[in-house]
Structures are given as C-alpha cells and as structure tokens.
Image (cartoon, rainbow over all chains, first blue to last red; front, side):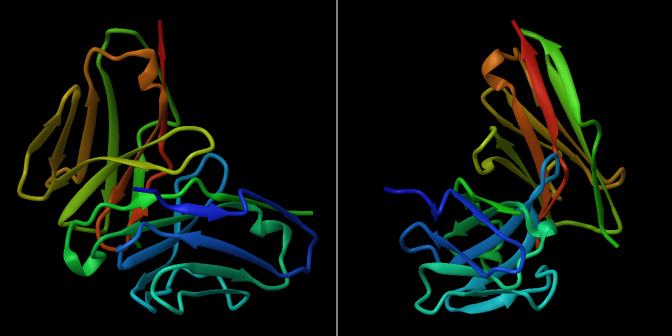
Amino acid sequence: GAGVSQTPSNKVTEKGKYVELRCDPISGHTALYWYRQSLGQGPEFLIYFQGTGAADDSGLPNDRFFAVRPEGSVSTLKIQRTERGDSAVYLCASSLTGLAGGSDTQYFGPGTRLTVL
Amino acid sequence: SQKIEQNSEALNIQEGKTATLTCNYTNYSPAYLQWYRQDPGRGPVFLLLIRENEKEKRKERLKVTFDTTLKQSLFHITASQPADSATYLCALEGDMRFGAGTRLTVKP
C-alpha cells in the first residue's frame, strides 16, 4: 500500500508568517511522529501521537509549534510567527503500534523542506 | 543528558571492502537500538533493530553488534557496493533520539 506522504514537499515563507505542514500516515498506523532535520544532523524528535492524543510533546522547541491529529490519522504541524531558525526538513513517521508496543518500526515520509526568508 | 555519537561524519571505502560504522551513547541504557539508512532528499529507512540481550544481528550483508558495557553499537556492511552509499543513522529506543549520522561513500 501507500507509504507516508507529506505535503507540501517544499514551503518557502517569510519571517513572521504562519505555516501548516501535513502528514498522511500509513493506513491503520496508530502512532505518528514529527521530527525536524537540519543539514548534516540526524532527525530531532518533536512530538509523538498515539491515536488522537499527543503522548509526548517534549521535543517541541517552544509554544510557536503545535501539532494536531484530530481523527487519529492525518496530522498537521503548525508553526506560528516563523523564524529563520525554523528552516529545516520536517519529517513525519508512522508506526503500527507506537512506543507502547515495544520495538515498533517507524516508516518515514519524504519530508517537507521549510525555508523561512 | 543523553548523548549519541556516530564515529565520523563521512567514511569513504573501496567497493568490496567492509564498512564499519560506530554508534556510541552515554547516560542511557536502551532496551534496543535501531539503524536506519537515509538517501538525499528522502526520509530514513529502517534497516535493523538489536535488543540489549542480543550481541549480534545479521541481515544479508548487514551485521549489527550491541555492547551494553561499552555503550556502543557497530554496524557493518560486507562486500560493499556503490549502491550502499548513503547516510546511516543510529537511534535509541524510547524517545527515538537519532545520532547525526555517518555519510558512507563506496567508490567503484
């Protein structure tokens, strides 16, 4: 079946603007993760959903970042008052059962490249 | 705080040789550790998972070891091929902290 998809693939915005990044996980996967990856670095954990609820949002850098998953499927990462330092690739991953299920493989999407001018 | 280090940013080897990548961690005792491959412009792809009670795991030309005393995992690719060129990431279980990755280049 289809893998994890993310839209848009690229987003260019101006400093101070609001952006939304979308993630469509693999159908049936209960867990969804958001990461941020800067050039030359590994993915940095942001938030993890188990179903509709955020099970762990400890990675969100500040209150400008917010994510929702209202129906337990698609998720949206929202960034308010964007700053140049927010420029990165935002990756989404999904897994069948999540961290509560033990060693659960994550399947990553291709990412959204966000550029804040 | 927890820290993950991968031995080098880049590793260049000749085709046919064995590539060995290192992942070290501190201030943590993971129940398992995972290795991922990432190609440019793509998300990471899961390769192997090794648990704390497993010393070694193999998958085709890949081999992973896990030494909980040294707090280290080694990732080996035998008979390397140019198609193996990519960035390889290790990640600790739990809150999925990733290392910075090692960019492997296999030259023909």
